[in-house]
Amino acid sequence: MNFLKYLKDQWLLVFGWVGFVFLTAFVMWLTPGFQMSWRNVGYLALIEGVFFAVILIYHYYYKRRWWQKLQSAEEESPIQNYLTGARTYEEQVQQDFINQIIREHQVHMQKIIAAQEEQKDYIDSWVHEIKVPLAASRLLLHAVEFDISDEKYMQLENELGKIDGYVEQVLYVARLDNFSKDYLIEETKLKSVIQPIMRSNANYFIQKKLRYQVIGENHSVLTDAKWIGFIFQQLLSNAIKYTPENGEIFILLDKSDKGVTLTVKDSGIGIPKEDLRRIFDKGFTGQNGRFSEMHATGLGLYLAQNLASQLGVELTAESTVGVGTAMTLFFPYVSYYQEQR
Image 1: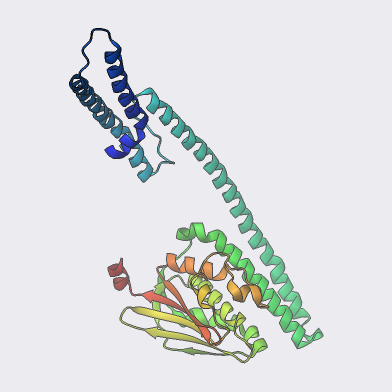
Image 2 (image 1 turned 90 degrees about the vertical axis):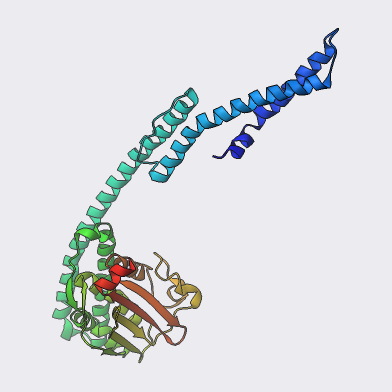
């Protein structure tokens, strides 16, 4: 707090001093036998003003230490560090009040963290438990494969695939906070990540009569294959979902002086310009998700962006309505990445 702001806060005290000067002059004027002189009144007001200014300046510098302490505590971490150093009763009251808020906040945070840990443990357990009936359902479906029509078999297979995808999303959401404990950076061939995922989505390509093509060399990058596979699955799922029948999907692999790019490009409905900047926000579905027949959770691209960022990979999007969308993963070379940082 600067001195001008301090004076503004002390307006009542300044007003009281001005009133005291006028009161003194009034008493002098009422005193019998006293020769009233405005020069004497001005001289008295000047002396009182100097004395009053000295007191205000001293009080300002005395209090400034406490204000600076409050400001520095706010910049560091006010909710974690207790406040100390109160010298006056007023400062002690403020200090006790702030420390009480910190204690209550810490108690509430501990309860919230404990509840989140319980919820995370439950979700992890639920995800692993639900995979058992999912696997059993697939076995049963394969057992009756020749007893039902190919169309119904493919539909059931696709629905089970969607359920499995949503279960995976839940699992990866739960693992976001513990990402640093569950990844392994190693040299990875991109096609070794792409090809199994393309095969697992073969039913969707067949059902919608989509054509796809992988263009480019099998470049190597330093990353975690499991997490990149999940990110690629989210991008590919969106491309399949929003590309109409007889459409095309291209997987482009390219290499430059700065790094390697992996692009999923489709000939789908595209993303409106006003939605493009928000597609990575959690829970955002946009016009395509709200008004199309395709149901969207708003989690796929959010997870993909979050995980890519933690892996040091840049995820960007370009789209034109009615033409298609291109989602690009940029894997910078280690030396280039360090220079940018």
